[in-house]
Length: 93
Image (cartoon, rainbow, N blue to C red):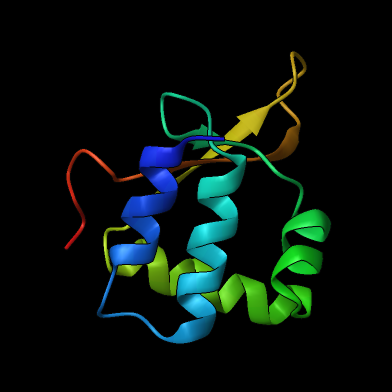
């Protein structure tokens, strides 16, 4: 967990309460490089929403330049989930 990322997430003002919660959960998962790779199921469960609602929240956070999502691929090139990068240093404000 990155305390800096969590504080950053809590300080965001131009987001809905659910968007902020999703951002705080991502921050709680983040390493010192502000990166994390929770499963969609785990993330949706911690935020308390269905997967389709989570997808909408994540798209809004991306549009607001608060997070970046990078596809992770297996050695065979198959999708294995996403890595999320919090835009803490860019401030995303």
